[in-house]
Image (tube, rainbow, N blue to C red; front, side, top):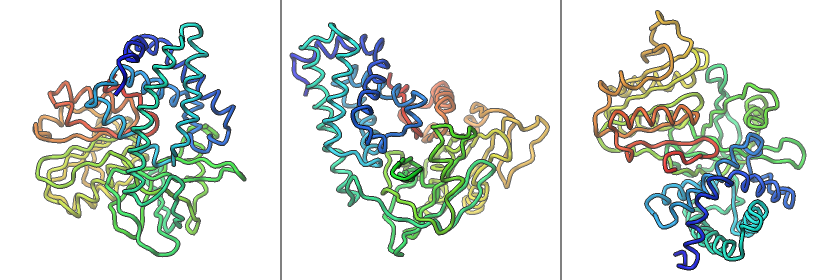
Length: 404
């Protein structure tokens, strides 16, 4: 618990962080990478280039300062962070490096306003949070039976196009042993050596039901050649072939929809955000095929629809599944179904679906670009859906817009 002496300084930091938080985090990352360039192997440098990671950290620091005594608000955020850290292999020693450079960035940006008492308060707050994260990550590593450096060598056994932008890669252990189980909705980290000695890793949702013998990921190719945000995905999309061996983490992630029960479940996705939803859908088709499911996915056009066969197969086994595709470029007079799913022209619009398909006891799961999830979440809340029944999976840095 934060000491009474430090509390006034952290409270007073809230408006300061609102104004200077992004500058502080930009300074932090710049200084840390200059001092420890080896850490670029752990961090997503595409998100660094776009500024998304700096904004995400600024949001997290602000959220902590504003809610340090509200466990109900911070607990889900910290759980999400713990899973992300475990997926990339964060170690306790990394917290010393981060703490030193974060406090240094606060001093550098705030100048004389960063009094010794303010820095002491943030040093205390940081290490209270770090201790909590280190302990939670240790427990997660123990449950996963893996350490931060543990990676599984998995061979690509199948490569399949999923529409015009996405390719799915089926991965199996090189020694034929059983794979660790996972919860539908979780992800793995895949390590790629872009050039000799230069490694980067990215997280990819598992896109099929657990079977113990193989995992499947689905990778979208970014349109811009050489764009930092897509360098690993584009490498996998273009270069990973059957027979190649990839180093892959154990599954992590707190986005794990409850599959049992009889209440309706609503799966809303856009773009490559379809991947965890397919894992959920395929697992539901095996475990609980009678459960009412509303599946709605948004894409730019028919060519970009991914995992159409999975949705169609699930429809054959799930009598209470209703599937919808929203296609931005679909002509207004084209309502031809896609393998049993109803098609709609334009962006996803929930009002017409909610009244017919989504009872009050339904749970809602979102995955896709942040603007898409923000729009759909707002529509759900406007329709009277309780916030506690709306869940989301964020690909990349989280701006924490649901608690700020």
